[in-house]
Image: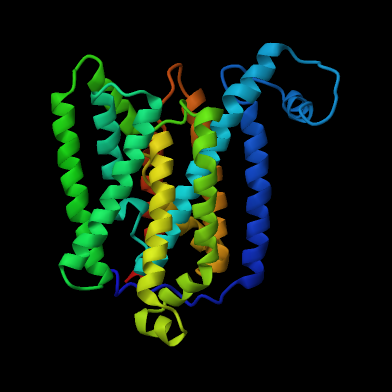
Length: 348
């Protein structure tokens, strides 16, 4: 149960944690730059750097127009979007795990993914365009969490356990609605489109779609990062947090709102991508400790790096691109199993 799971003390490995954060920053930048040249149309690292620098400094072109178009118009927005989605999901997962005091919580615990999936399927069934799909997915994702929050009010309790149970109820409702929409969909066109969206992919991300979501996602991520101290207090328990001057109900509401917004927006541009918000915070906790001052930024950096690497595999492993949601499940399951085995004493 959420109220019974305890994390280790938050003040541990301070110097090691800071060093690990700097290594993560360097690793993310290296992976990002390397990924710009990876794909069926390979580009040498020196040409990648020259193409990027040519937009700032005047340089002699030693590359062709196709190479520049692939880097700037296809891969750059895709990698920026992947970084944004990976960081958002991992950050939301870390925030929820701290708030619920439960390392088994993921960003979709309150039904946001189920609601977004229902919204996207409904938009596809009605023949809406890409923007309509994103708006519908975002609307129903946020609506699902709002419904879970107010359903807890109907139980006349402020318990986080009841909030989780309300999320399970709402998630089950939207999952049933999604099944109904799939049953009604055209099996030759609409149903495959719904199935592909639910598997998750970064292929459709371009600069226009990225421009419409970047500011609210960065705003939500920044808000969660500002809640680091309060998350530390909440992870100690409600009474301890209140004794430290934290308004527990208000802080929980703010965290839920911020995590929901960044998760819903991420899902609406990439489809359903599981395991990132569950596994990455565990890996970050193993590397930098449980102090949220380091854990939240570490989760964001690792989430962005991991999703870029998985997207590289999705693009290059076979002739047809593999949905990234499949890869996150294949990679995340064994990693999560190993981490549970290593931390079984902490989780008991």
